[in-house]
Length: 301
Image 1 (cartoon, rainbow, N blue to C red):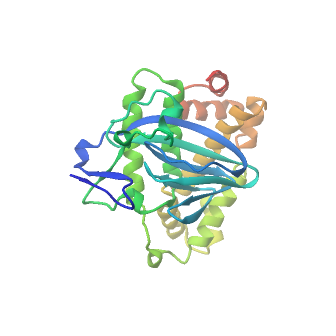
Image 2: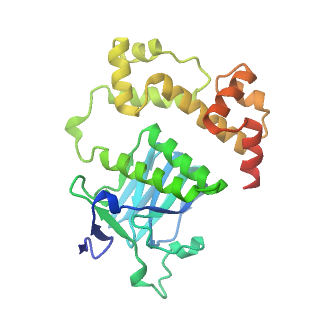
């Protein structure tokens, strides 16, 4: 069953979950300098996550501000204009995909509509389900760290392209779509009075990953018992406090290995691991390769 919404786009198809078969067309870390980009629309869909800085998107007559830790869902066929608000730049994770493996994308330019010669039959369709509202019914999502980790797994699979990466990307995209669909939308009444403190705490952990964070620190900052604080923290982030700290440290270690020339030992110290051997073991457990090999691969690709 096909339907149209909001002036015709995105095209939509109601289908049972067994028929959802997402295909990833692009997955990459990006840096963009301060400024406004050209208005455009896409043949596929994009999840654009702000990992650092602040951005904004004007779409359907509304300007949406996207802070670090949030993403915007850009539907197929909908005009939008992106901009970087923070100076001197912002950093992103971007994933282009379709829901039904229906597009043949050979280059990045194939994803963007050439308005001089648009191809109406090429616009991808959004999957609809009776279980959830359409993902396009919301523009901006605040996502937990486990969601970002799944995005980063897709980026890694897409960049390194090991045998079977298409299957891995499909499975990971299904997980992303399920996670996104389960996030609350338009329910301010469900907010916890502890949410501002929880967000501030998570921001502090991300700013100082090397600090020896403990469950007692978390509970003390929220003025709650250890068990209650841990429960609220997991509801907000999708991870226990300890898991969140390790995930932030690992994400920052990967960034430092990709983007700096710091020694592996210094990278480990910068994220809270004073013992280089322990840091190497933890990193290998997450990535399957050593920090040194990860750095080499990231600079080849």
